[in-house]
Image (cartoon, rainbow, N blue to C red; front, side, top):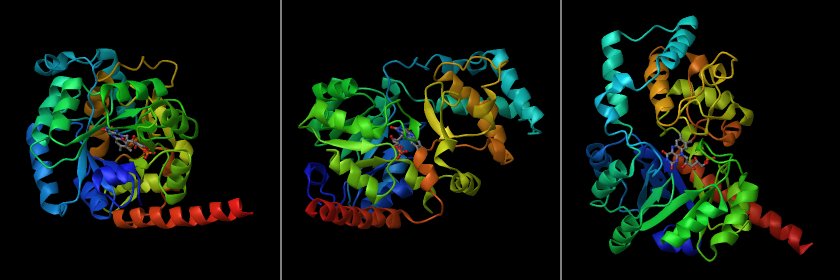
Length: 371
Ligand SMILES: Cc1cc2nc3c(=O)[nH]c(=O)nc-3n(C[C@H](O)[C@H](O)[C@H](O)COP(=O)(O)O)c2cc1C
């Protein structure tokens, strides 16, 4: 394909893959798309390790990195020294009792403390923490830096450009997209509410063309609810120059999710991908489960603000639940496209299906226009 984004990165297919899994990143780039590694919960040492591995396996193909850098998130630097004081007792008790009542064994007390320290160590959402990881990443041949939680700082954009690295940011509203454009981003990623993970409240069908118009002639990627060629065709028809997908890779043999969670995804419908604050404290689309449901009860406490709700889920919930693979509570961020994810395939097959279905869609459109 030929368009601005394919030319910008020298890729064949404008399919940009967000993934926390380095194997997915490598396979997408090798199949002609663009893999982008999510660095949430990493630190500079881990970034170094992951990117060394990618560099050794990607055959010189381009790839990017994605950070969760928010100017609004409380700097967890000081909190890291006192993890015991982070969570209100009422919330801890609420989750403990929820899991006790479901027959899920408690964590041994000494392990609970170590686990909490590890979790807090991985909460690297502040600009200070993200920039340290980016500095490490810039010593590798990364071609793209994406920020998920706002406009990247001007200094970072200048430094990236000086090194020939492109910069983009996610947007759920046209005003956010305009801010990214004004700051000097090379393109914008418009993410509709259908998306897995943190997302806004406007659907892709409405959001994409409004962001395309808001930032023209800057290129736009359409994200949120894209898992196949017909959706890529829709994005192109609506004015985007490619797509940004996260959920669809979770069904692949290369993905990081456990077999139990993958199986839950294969059984799920689009309605099972619920938008909930219970996992991170911000609206995050996730596979519905007994934990997300429990907060709807009349006696449930208020959800904590980010990132504390996330500490609560990881320490008191996720760690306990995943140990015994308690099916009702198992969950993972996923978008509405989960209803279309029914069996395991390879990353390469997903990319090739994107292209085959896009060509079918083009023929169908041509046929109707000719008539
Ligand atoms: C498992 C999972 C984890 C995600 N984590 C992040 C993240 O750390 N940073 C980020 O920018 N977006 C994250 N996202 C959102 C993706 O960047 C992307 O916007 C979204 O997946 C697109 O919609 P889709 O899920 O319908 O493909 C995540 C998505 C999923 C499914």
